[in-house]
Image (cartoon, rainbow, N blue to C red; front, top):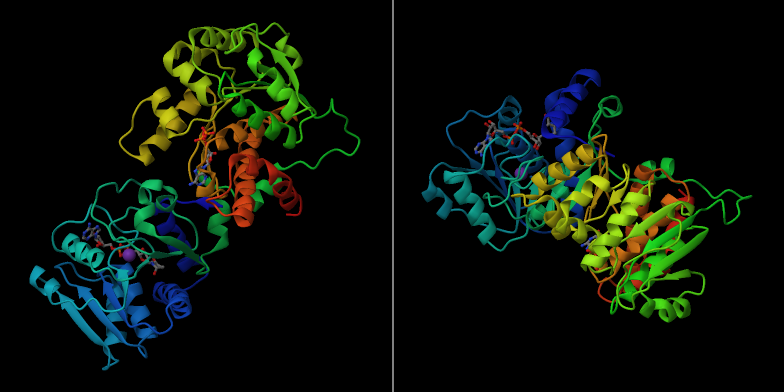
Length: 500
Ligand SMILES: NC(=O)C1=CN([C@@H]2O[C@H](COP(=O)(O)OP(=O)(O)OC[C@H]3O[C@@H](n4cnc5c(N)ncnc54)[C@H](O)[C@@H]3O)[C@@H](O)[C@H]2O)[C@@H](O)CC1
Ligand SMILES: Nc1ncnc2c1ncn2[C@@H]1O[C@H](COP(=O)(O)OP(=O)(O)O)[C@@H](O)[C@H]1O
Ligand SMILES: [K+]
């Protein structure tokens, strides 16, 4: 699913108005009806207080008020100097024809203290037309709504939140639910906004599909349609050679478990063969835990320092989980990156090694996949002042270095060298548990070894990993699931993808 920016969303509205054709006021009515259906379903009995600005977001609020006028409602209009939009004015005159609906105006800060915050508060103050942070009386009203302790439902966006740029530290509504139209906005994918959006519900309002189909977007949310095109069913005549031989370089004394998790996930991703290079202390552990995995042991007991095998025999290579960052291990990483010319998956300590020796970046083969979490990303590429800037920086680095950057989080970003960015839609907070990232490294390495191109491997692997996490959480709860459970549910995740 494409994610449009605020300007594109406006164009989409306009396109629908001129091509459907539908009048702007009727489109607003459709949006309001969709909200009313939702409100009647979620809050069928409660009294409602509706706060409207004088833009089209406020117009939505007035239309909602009219459609719900049989219920116990009060409408407040934040009436600062600006004139209302045409659709706002039209909806105001329609509402004024219903004498039993009480409309109050907030014109001064004093008026705010007279507001009765009753029942569920509907926030229709500002939507995607926001062009500057809230201040003055608007900020004050928003603050009072947030302090009220009432349930808050925002229309389109929590007022004060920008649709496609950071709103960090700006005054904004703290909604329990956000009812937005037609498709996801960038704002809803940012962790820094999550406390303000509450639960996001996307309501279909029939915007014209032609605009969606014909308008390119740099940002997409990974969905079933995308996965359907990426996933390749297994060749019935394949043998283990067909599905590739993966090498994992992982683990150190006390962290052999990271290697075990990666190796098992790699196996269960469908790869033909897995070899794991380990310090010698890990030999027995790996052979007992996973008899399917072959082990190459390092001369060192506790850390990896040298590899003697010919790396070119491996179809894909994953490096990093539990590896440590000792100088000997950094030397090994340098050697591996110099020798190996296919894509590698680099995670965890492999990334921390690069952060310590930034000149290693230039040695990473083009098309490789880097999987930092935000802290690892910061060590590698520096600090940013907000999440939107971090995503832009990841995208810029992916282009500059010709790498795929998988920036992990609730909506993991996959930044491709051609500038496209995919935001993952699976996964849950149960995956915030040690070892989940190691599992992802194994899956990605396994997909590369099976011949998936890097971009497809990243998109599919991150989706599968999240889906397996969702299935695990459904069965076990988010609290009780552990990283190994993500592996145990990979099979079911594959099955549900195969059935798409
Ligand atoms: N036909 C359409 O275009 C549709 C629009 N819809 C609604 O329309 C909204 C967008 O409407 P608008 O473009 O009128 O935008 P808004 O309703 O967000 O209001 C924009 C107005 O507020 C002012 N403003 C911006 N930032 C401000 C700030 N910080 N403090 C005070 N005033 C500020 C702007 O100068 C402008 O006059 C959407 O969010 C959605 O709710 C929906 O009804 C669907 C259909
Ligand atoms: N709240 C969350 N929602 C969705 N996915 C999550 C969440 N928390 C963690 N994850 C996923 O779990 C994995 C954690 O990786 P990482 O931080 O490297 O863990 P570790 O180092 O313990 O292996 C990532 O793929 C991340 O996207
Ligand atoms: K709003």
